[in-house]
Amino acid sequence: MQRYSFLSLAKNALNGHRDWKPAWRSRELKNRYEVLVVGGGGHGLATAYYLAKNHGITDVAVLEKSWLGSGNVGRNTVTVRSNYLRDESLPFFTRSVELFDGLSKELNINLMHSKRTMIDVVQTYGKLRELRRRQLVMDIYDSSYEQISVDELRRRVPPLTGGGPKSRLPILAAFVHKDAAVNRHDAVAWGYARAADDLGVEIHENTRVENLKRDSSGKICAVETSRGTVGARKVAIAVSGHTTTLTETAGLKMPLRTINLSAFVSEPVKPLVDVVVNCPDIGVYFSQSDKGEFVIGGATDLGQSFRRDIKQSVFEDTVCSLLELFPSFKKLKLLRQWGGHVDIAHDGSPLITKTAIPGLYVTAGWWGGYKAIPAGGEGFAHLVAKDQPNSLISPFGISRFRNLEFVFETGTTAVR
Amino acid sequence: MLLIRCPFCGSRNESEFMYGGPAAVRRPSNAAEVSSREWVEYLAVPSNPLGPALERWWHARGCGSWVTIERNTATHEITESSDGD
Image (cartoon, rainbow over all chains, first blue to last red; front, side, top):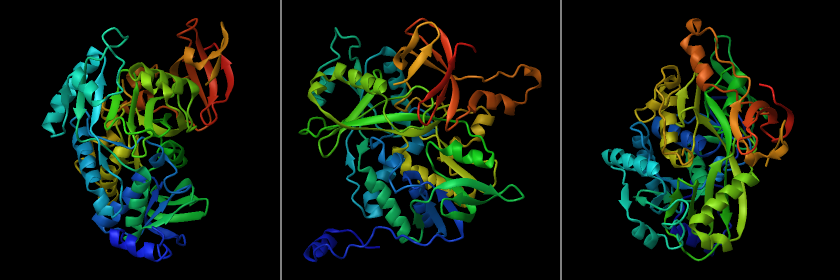
């Protein structure tokens, strides 16, 4: 692997930038692999990387239907945090934040990782009680969460001028989560791809998986792709949104619904807000990117959807909510909008699991799965390699539905 | 934005409606004989089609009617609507 450093940058600059090598290689698709990872998004690429790095399994191919980073890894709002509620979720997300903090160095790529602090703005007493409860649980797991006064909140977030005592929903308090961060999503996909490629993993773009094939004993044996059939001993699925579409080709139903989550971004302006601001009671959150754009996320569409766009009604609701608290944002022009399809389980928690089909593994149900890429990939790789989950992902198996051991998680932004 | 046909009010904006989940999900009637596997499927495993889906919508900010529509989850095209259940 060509290392990135100040020296290599200087050397290549003097050389007219003619000697940069591609970050990952394009190779011939073989007939058979030990492990096939379906989906070249954040979770798929991270899984391939940790399979090679932690378990020495390098006969791995990542099959991506489009270009790397075209799915949800390029469609999120890059918020990394661990302010969750459940005993099952907190250690997992704390681990993910910890891995993200060291990831630029580990992958030798600048993720532009920026510890930002997240502030949750509270406007109802129900939310206040819930966040106090979260704070107590988070204390146990060393995840930082601290209540601040409304005056302190307004000092730290200067454009927050709405939500006064006479407004519809007056601001009651705020909670500060110091571990939160934002970074660059493309670099996460490229960094994992480059590091996995360096360890011997093959990455195949424009290779759409259409069908899963089972042998006579019922075990998974191959996948049919747009470039022909590829055999494998194990198949690991990381295709947010289309999980059920794919597993149903092998006759497997999953407890997942696909819904559209949208976001949009403003024109770049001067630095104004240096934290991630989340307003769960009105359903909007944002952060200001390094370029100065406000990256704004809201609620989901109603009903199931695979469309990956933004609906006018959702867009209007989100903007109205935002302007209620931040009236000066009225002057901002919005530049781009997009949607991503996520699949959500009945209890709002992810599924990282073996399935009823031997050799078939699924990671899905990611709701705000960007922050979970490192720990999710690490856990999923462990599951695929050893056929047993590690302790962090063991609560997220599919058996929790059979045994009614749901992990109802209110720490996702969408549950209100 | 979806335009949903309400049998009482005519075609109305989606923002007047609440989503009521997939239609035609039948609760097992022979409760005593149903296995826990079937109960879990009924409770937690929804149909998730890429294409036409039958679903219920409630005209909550309108006349209060319930309507059933067939909507394509990939295109949002509404191909059929009725007020039956």
